[in-house]
Image (cartoon, rainbow, N blue to C red; front, top):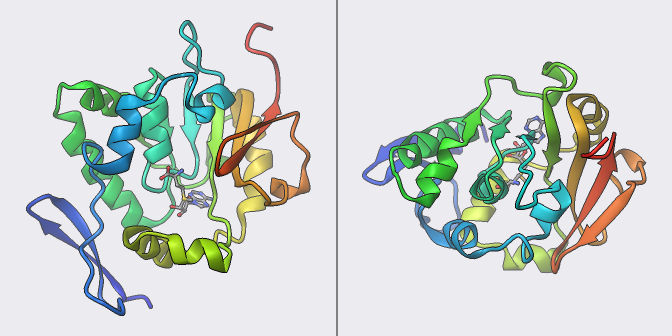
Length: 224
Ligand SMILES: C[S@@+](CC[C@H](N)C(=O)[O-])C[C@H]1O[C@@H](n2cnc3c(N)ncnc32)[C@H](O)[C@@H]1O
């Protein structure tokens, strides 16, 4: 498995190649200007994006966010598009390289997505527990959660590759307590609708979107 994946420079950016894929696959390249993430970042509104509500973004207040499970940074891009400064933590070395490459390319552009990318920063730390208390307003967590058979069949090829690379995040429960110490105001955890609470801890509030649930753990109100 160690050599099943390889990173190589392509014309479109750094690409992740899956050597042991059962059928030929295009490399996975993070490109904030392409695909669903770009569409979502450009066309969503504060009202339509449950993640923005969960994090507490309003027209007047854009909390600083640490996305402590950055992955492909699709959620982070949405938050940055709404004006939040988003710092990213990602522990998988290949995903970190893909992210660094994508950010560098996007930050050169002066369109809305380029400006959003300029509000995003990949941190050197690889776990939320490595940060000081009160480092940001909100910590956002979206660890991998085991997929059911039905969902698995629907997962697109690039997501299959990503899931195969990073695995299941079986230690996800260890994220909640340090996240609560690092966030001044709240921790937001994205979960599949039927998943148990992270670390078995009941949130103060929940917001539901079509596919997900956002569990919100409040340290203090934004106005207190
Ligand atoms: C489901 S993905 C996140 C997807 C992301 N929200 C997006 O929009 O693309 C989870 C990511 O968190 C990373 N991760 C899991 N546990 C972590 C930890 N304790 N510290 C840092 N990164 C972690 C995994 O390597 C994986 O890339």
